[in-house]
Image (tube, rainbow, N blue to C red; front, side):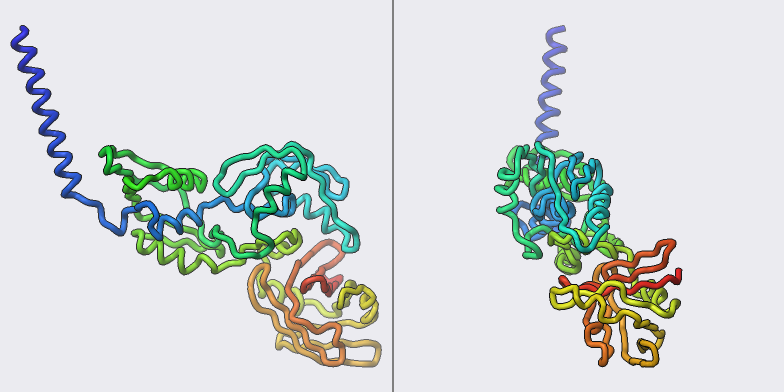
Length: 358
């Protein structure tokens, strides 16, 4: 019996040595393709990290900070109206309060304590504005170029494998979101080789998707599109009302209705221009001409619209009505039972056309 056990143990040891030898030989001889292997400090791994860094700009209406976001839920008071912000959609409720009146001073109060999520997804409890400002002061200011890439997003899940050449351990990776991928990349060391399972897909800000077959393609896509969008890294909560606007939509509104009038006009940091064009009506024609009438007087000009979403430019030129003229940006199209409003802005200047046509 003892002899039999010794034979079995000997066979097991020999088998283990043969397996280990074969595995080591396989690791040495069978290398994954370079265009599918991530290594620490490579260009592509740094680009991926930038693309999955936590973007804190989407909730600037609350914290006015681009490098972190407030963890939800949080309670705030917008113009003294208490709002529970439990999801990103609730940020619109805060904006709606601020948008209700054009001539009031908008204020927001945060009910502390809150938790903020930093760029590396670490979390910090904040108990007052002094502490909050100590973090926000370390963020880049409005529209200052930062390292995070917001124009390219990964579609999950992403799978792959990791091999550590130091301890020869092979493991499987499985990531479900940006936080997972950032944490994984941040914990890699110089001995780790990561192979991703291609194809993987990314989505751009215009909601188009790109299928990618290797790391060379991935690096090219991120480099090509990383600055191809407006990252909206400012504190102006009311500059995103045209996320879904199109030039065709605007042209349809303006040309389908006649007799537009101006109910809001602010130029040169003054609202005393509001009454400049009382009684004037405006007709936008499909051929790009613009006609304004005031009693028996008629004025002729031109108009154009180009761009997409929050970057639609409306150029108006009526030589005899100079306060109308500007390279305006479409701020909002509002349709309600009382009619339609087309709101144009440029910095602090504003011109709003109104029509009872629906």
